[in-house]
Structures are given as structure tokens and as C-alpha cells.
Length: 82
Image (cartoon, rainbow, N blue to C red; front, side):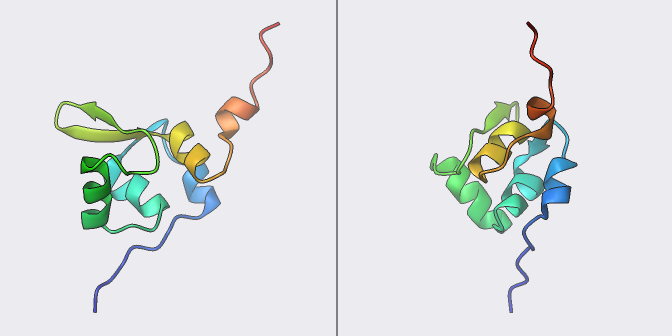
């Protein structure tokens, strides 16, 4: 039997740093395993933007939350710079 990762809770998502690794954090947010996460990334089908930083694959938390239909509390609580 394959042990799939459990998807993240909203509290876990909001606690993520501004940029997270593609695996495990971003993949786990969508309930994906490691192989599926990297396969989607390599074929350009991962559901949000991926940053390639050298050999590292990173995902901005704001893009991750947006793809999941959530708003980033860091951006929604900012005061207008009027």
C-alpha cells in the first residue's frame, strides 16, 4: 500500500514562509506525492508558478494560496499606501 501525504490544513498553509520548496510543502498543499509533484512541474502543469533557483524548485506562498482559492493574510492585512 502506498502512503500518500495528507493535504495541509489552512493553519499550516498560512504558517508557510514566503517561498517554499516544491516538495514537500507545495506538493503536499495539493495532496500530491513526490513523483506526481515533480512530473507536473517538469511538464509545466503544476497548478501554480514555480521558481527555478539553481537546482532548487521553489513556489511563492502567495501563488500557492491563490491556486487553492485562498488569500494570503500578509497581503490582505496591509494598509493602503495612500
